[in-house]
Image (cartoon, rainbow, N blue to C red; front, side, top):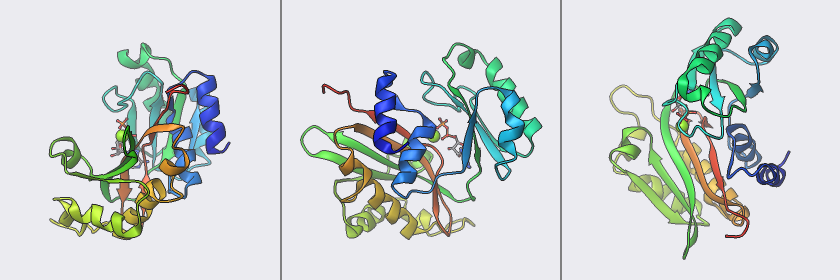
Length: 236
Ligand code: ADP
Ligand code: MG
């Protein structure tokens, strides 16, 4: 399914957001790298799915009722066998918060290469239209609010400047034994979200908010490991 179809389908199901798998298909359509993944409904489907992926893998709960999967006990990383995947799913299914939720299934995906976590977002300002945002992951965004914004569409130079404006930008160059993160991969991803033919400009009537949190950036590239898109309501 292409982006338009995914959005139409979500609306037909009265969903205000795309599920993580649909969100990642949309990102992939714009050339943003996402992990190889499959979804299962039951542990009985795990063996077949597992053979199609390169371990270690991650399992995540898919539910329209759960926004922060980790907080709900709905993310387990570093699983090396189908048995570990099944155990993780059984443990999730037994957690109180997940029991109370509607469950679409479980996403099983490959681990991204190690790197630094950043956040890329898109939102709509009532006056300026689509905006694009970048920040460094973890405490940089959540506690320090170290983020920068631009009005879409952005150019390559805008994207470079957005990164330079971050107070923690030097972290990306590698500090305290960390490997540097590819700046050009971040610039590319920002253009794919906020550039002229990027997804915020293209889906200006459909998407009110985009959130890639995190994108894991290694020396060689960037992988969007979480994706959330809030749809614009049809009449507003
Ligand atoms: P949520 O934000 O809903 O809690 P995420 O999908 O962002 O769930 O997963 C939580 C964390 O697990 C991520 O911030 C990241 O550190 C790690 N993670 C998730 N998916 C992957 C992946 N495919 N490869 C490597 N790490 C991952
Ligand atoms: Mg996340």
